[in-house]
Amino acid sequence: MQRFALIGAGFIGSVHAQNLASHPDVDFKLIYDIDPQRAAGLASQHGAKAATSLDQIFDNDDLDAVFIASSTDSHAQNLRYAADAGLAALVEKPIDLDLETAKSTVAYVERAGIKAMVNFNRRFDRAHAELKDLVSSGEIGELALLQLTSRGPALPPLDYLKTSGGQFRDQAVHFFDLARWISGQDPVRVHAFGSALSAPEIAEFGDVDTSISALAFPSGALAQIDCVRHTNYGYDEHIEVLGSDAMAESERQRSGHVSILRGQAAQSHGLHSNWFDRVQPTYAASLGAFVQALEEDGEVPISLREGLKSQAIAQAATRSISSGHSEIVDYSL
Image 1 (tube, helix red, strand yellow):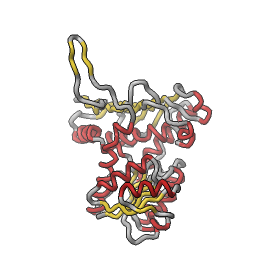
Image 2 (tube, rainbow, N blue to C red):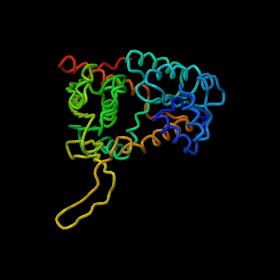
Image 3 (cartoon, helix red, strand yellow):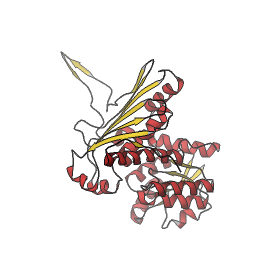
Image 4 (cartoon, rainbow, N blue to C red):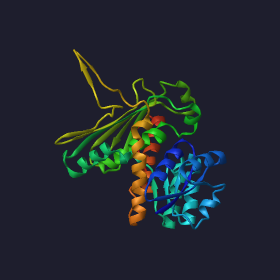
């Protein structure tokens, strides 16, 4: 049994708490949150105890790992605490909104030698993983073009957007990661375009809600990622891969799988009403992969360095919006 503590009892923390409590090889012991009542309430739901301070987690010989799902501005510091304590760590993205802080944190954690994984959970979507396997096996031939789509049904609250780091660091970064993972290559350049169409007011703090990012890979293959914060038809996530021999697609997923044909009309289900309903199973699968790495003393599936690479692409895309030019992606640690 891997003895876990959870830091963060907000929405995503509650998702992780459910998965930690449900995993047969996890002993879910502690939850800490800056709001003690929120931590206590979540702990009581899942048979864990509420920690009243971070010291109860990071100065504790009765733990093996920590799941960091606290506010973004605390990820880097909590990773450093985990490194000092010798605890394995699974952390929500990003490591830190500031890339240089994220880099120094990764170097610090690597020197400590703990197992640490960034939670790019969409890699554990079954259809996306099958697509990755097709590309890796050569089934579609030489990769030519990746098309990735992420379109959300509703704009997040403005208070969230002001601290999110912008669409490229918050939303598109998942798909920068998928583009790297599926292609097996690190993009060398990115050219991005963006507009604030659904919420013009977010332009006041430099954000966009509608964007396209074009990535160039070393092989000459290309990727295009379109991200939209607000649609009128549900949450839309799908990926298409074009190769020299075939095309493969991780299709749009509907909220149901039964259609009705009546006369000349057809009735079928639309898309999921929100992003969480679409990707919920990937969170449990991601945790499962991390626990397996701990049990088998193997490599974690997504290293902190991989998280840095996707963040570096997001940084270059953000620069591209400002410069109006394509930008080189700097992967130096």
